[in-house]
Amino acid sequence: MALIDEFHRAQEIAQERAKETQELFREAQEQALELARAHAHEARERMRLAAETMPPGLLVRLLSSFVGIPFSLAVSFADIGSAVRGVPFASAIILSALLGGWEFFRGVRLRGFRPTWILGIIAIGMMQVAAWAISVNLYPSVLPAVFATLVILTLIYQIFRRDPEPVANLGVTFVGVVYVGWLMSYLIFLRMIPGSVHVWPFQNAVIPYFDMTSLGAWLVLYCCAVTWSTDSGAYFVGLRWGKTPLAPHISPKKTTEGAIGGVIAATTMSILWGTWIGIPLIHTIFLGALIGALGQMGDLAESAMKRDLGIKDFGAVMPGHGGILDRFDSLLFTAPMAYYYLVLALPR
Image (tube, helix red, strand yellow):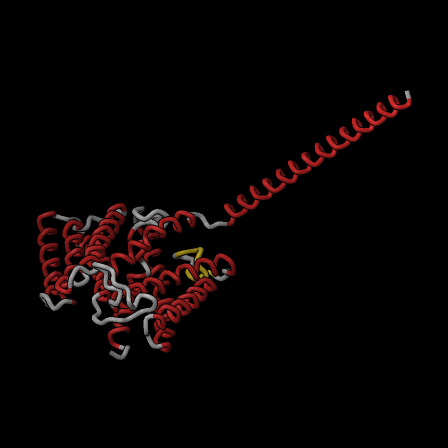
């Protein structure tokens, strides 16, 4: 009997221990679930806060850049022979200029103007062809011929159209041609600057149909990088520290602090990229500051035009960025200045 009683007691103790173990396991399981729920809730809160604090459209702009940057690199360095040097890049700029011209003339037509937009777009395209032709010493007088032809044909067209406001419509036509066509052509002039540069780590790279030593290609990328770093620097500095309005009648969100941040960002990028490709340090400082200031003037100039036309963006061909003109607004001011500075001020 004593043995049986001890057996029953041992059995009861084992059952109690098993219940205690099950209880401890259940409690541990509940604690683990609570902890997992807490971490999941915290992660959701962080995602919500990140979504709220992330500037509108920033994610779309970043994703769009992941496509646009490789394409820009490819067309900048693409070369299919010395006889047609720079044709891939010039072709890309011709297409961009034609789209930009269409965006501009569409915008002014929404405002009620009646530009001679077909002739204007043709002239814009011809200016890009002229820039390439002049750079390779082919038909050096073609650019004045384009201007003269545009003026004559536009005036003839206005005569037969019986336009009630010929001066205003002629004006917006010529502004579109000069603003989009002439200024954008300087990207081609910049790309066609002769010379070679051996940039680490691409100095020994041999890629069919790509010239990684093209000085003009590196200068185009330099100008784009410095210009767009101006936009980023001004945007994020203004978002964090901006208090003083820069030009409230044109763009209420732009601030003086942001403008200073843009110039600093441009100068920093100019020093880093410029010295990398062999531009003397002192010139990278001057040119970076000039690009930083002038790029923001280009942005403000286009903002003023869009405000006058009553539109938010000129187009939507580039997700997150707007249209061609919305992405190239600063470059239209910085590319001509960078071209003349690099050609005239730098030792050759």
